[in-house]
Amino acid sequence: MATLHKIIIGKTGRLQHQKIFSGTIRSDIFLSMTDIMRVFDPTSVIRSLLALVPGIPLAGCLVTGTDSDPVAIASRVAGPDFSLTCMAEVLRPAVFTEQDKHVPVTDNVLELSKIPSTISHHDIRIQTEPARFAHEQVASEFVERTEKIRIMDERIELDVVPPVYRTATKQIKLSDPRTRWKPGCRAEGDGNAATCLETTPARYTSVTQTLVDVPARVVQTRIPAEYMEVQRLIRIKTGQGTGIIPARYRTIQVRRVSKPWQIRVSRQVPQTSRTFHLHLKQRPEQLLKMPALCTDRLQPGQLRHIQLKLQQAGYLSTITGTLDTLTLSALHRYQHDNQLAAGAFTRETLNHMALLDQ
Image 1 (tube, one colour):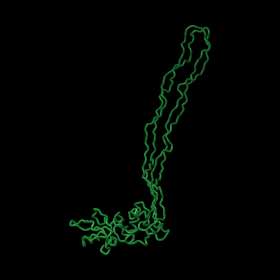
Image 2 (cartoon, rainbow, N blue to C red; image 1 turned 180 degrees about the vertical axis):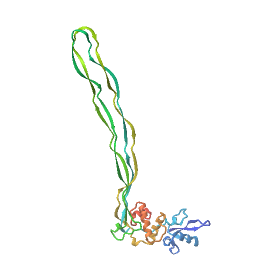
Image 3 (tube, rainbow, N blue to C red; image 1 turned 60 degrees about the vertical axis):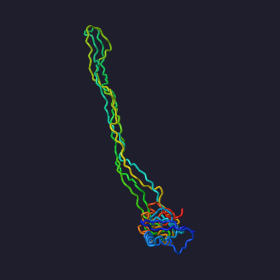
Image 4 (spheres, one colour; image 1 turned 90 degrees about the vertical axis):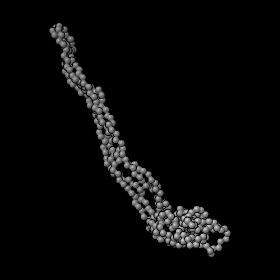
């Protein structure tokens, strides 16, 4: 028992199909879809058949729907059996991760400046001779001494030593080496898959860095106090007499620190960096064996189904039914772009093309 649909070209030139029979079908009066797919261009053949013999029924199960494109209809016809009876050595692609790396070009720098201390000045009077009697009946006794008078306090002076920079060139790896299957290459014999591999070397770039080697620092210098020597007469015994000779004084200027040295941040220069987009391997490539179609036993019908999928994906322009270099190259590029194991017609690839029953 089967259900028949007929496909005709209507008056408007659009394809139409409708259910015409449900029952037993005589196989000698129908064209199978496999017969149609054996020719060079299935689209033109279907159009020619429908144009010459309007209403001819096509054997097979066509999905009822609204598609008017014969290629779309033909792609939904049950294809040939794909039996994975061989083991093929294939290249499982690497898994890459993408990340951004920020590389400093210049460091964050604090520019320091110093504010000197504030020195105040004032005068002091030092008695060099005490008062005495102008007319002494009993003489006073004196002793001469040398005394040190502090004229400047001890202080701490600050100074800024600027940073020391170093210039270096750093190498940045932008991407790890990548190995892929050469498009169109066929590995002859077991263990020869390595002959079909090509490796793109890792990519690097360089960046020049100007970084702080020795940071800026503050240096303290201790300045000792300053003194002046003054000769003085010190009375050790007071005499007697009349009249007074006033005491003698000496004026000395002394300095005092009224505000100490200070260091302040005059400017902050922010860090600058460059950002690089990296492609690094999370998992490396691997040669392994997988179940696959036996290429020496591929039938033209099987190849045409595969070529049709490659054509619909934009990798192949001509359907030939033969396993030529163009087909292999299209297959390998398809596998590479879709992160599939490359080098053979594997279950993974056929599943991705929707050619196997899930």
